[in-house]
Length: 338
Picture 1: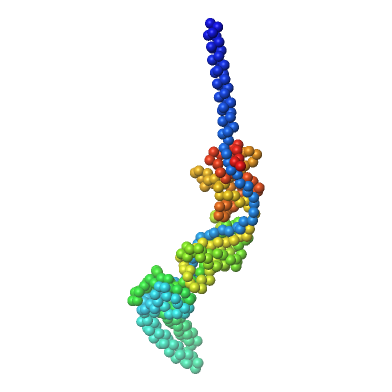
Picture 2 (picture 1 turned 45 degrees about the vertical axis):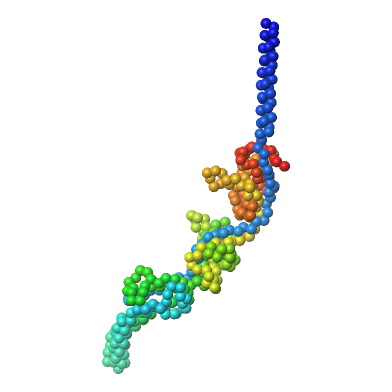
């Protein structure tokens, strides 16, 4: 009996020891289970406030060439791609109507001249003289308008970008006979955040790249700053012009315009510190302080190689996590790898 009691007591002691040892082991594991992280010291520094905008190249001026009324096209003198000068003859319309109206004008002029001679010697009344003079002026205006519609000239120096008719076709409205565009200079229209409204100045330089020419830069200038803010988009329009003397830049090309709004002191962090939240477009950074990390939402600025400018979210002179973020949440205690 005594021997049995001793065995039971021994077993109880072993069991108790086993339980105590397990708790101690778990406590050790808990201490060792802190996530290990690597940190980087970050500070604020001057950062160029550069913004890139996309746009489509537009002609400086675009003119549709067409007569004012339906008429048959006699001859078109240019093709798409031809360069033309201001005042150059582009299209000759059917002249049959012009010849007929010219005869009518000459008859009206003879009629008025006879009445004018009679009026001078009292052979006709003032009212008759006035009526004939008005009729002559109406006929002259009609002839002038028809003459302008018979020979169509270019109002600008530019390039023919569209031809919608052939010789002998009847023009009846709709598409113009030709389109001529002035491409020296060309322009871009961009929409800039109201944040920069006071910083965009007429004449400011703009670097422009065109996808068709790769990394080659073209020099542009701000030519117009619109004085109103769009209440919906919180942006304002800005016009940029490129001299385009060699005419390499053409309407319709895709362009990227870069504006520099000066410098601003902002915190800069390694790109390894940026964490993207799953299922959202928000970006975060784990900031280390006193053995714990905080999960800070940040607003990204420029990417500069392997670094990001932060507009907000991380205080100056902070330490941020650059490795080991997978197991972290807000408030996690961590061990720092040296």
